[in-house]
Structures are given as C-alpha cells and as structure tokens.
Length: 145
Image (cartoon, rainbow, N blue to C red; front, side):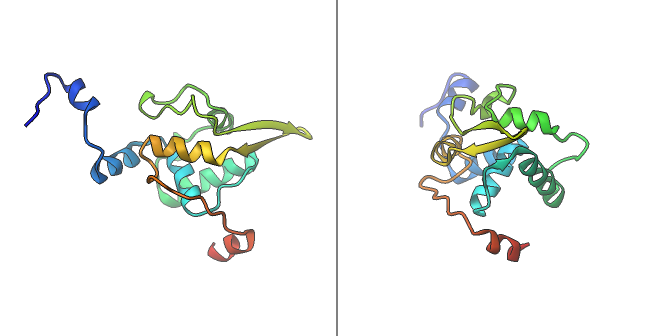
C-alpha cells in the first residue's frame, strides 16, 4: 500500500470519493452552498443584486445554515459575486468567470455565466460531474413556495 511522507502529500493525493465530496459541501462557504442550492432547484437567475441577496438571506434563515448575526452584508455579497478574492483558499473561484455586474438605471444587476459557474463548482467538488442546470419557470417557482 502506498503511503505518504507528509500530511500535505496525503492531501494532494487524496481520493475523490462521495464522502470527500460530502465533506467539501459541508465545509463550503455559505454563498457557494446557496449557489449550489439555487442551481439544483433551477431557480438561480440574474437580476438585481439586492433581490439575490434577499433570496440568500432567506435561504440562510430557512435552512439554518449559519448565524444570521455573522451573515455577509449586501455589499460583501455583491463583491463575492464579482469574484472578490477574500474567500477561503480551499474554495477559491476568483479565476472563474461566473458572471458580471452592471449598473442599470442606478441599480446593480447581475448576469450569470452558467457554464463557467457550473464547471467551477464541479471542479471544487460541490456539484456532480455532468450536472445540467434546468431553470424552472417563475410560475413553477411560486407553486413550490
């Protein structure tokens, strides 16, 4: 059986199993967990950053995914969407073009690059290989809530 001389060697060569992927999902930053949730449920949509932030905070409260006291501000949330580098090194997606923000009529709007976002989340082992994003219609979304 192959053994490694240092913990770093072991970490670099660790097998990617379903247990490893579960641990990655558990330890992912809140906003990445939210993105995965939105993608899996077909509701991730571009639009006003403030609307997405409201969805994010509602998700945190509903799923009890952390303390509301330590929640990101809307400004920091917007920066993360814009590939800010102030995120955990283990989950760094700053090199991935996940979308872009644009001010329109005095309001910040966001447009997703779904293909790149999904590829990045697969690379981080937060989504399964071959994941397909299938958006649901607005009427379906209202019925689910």
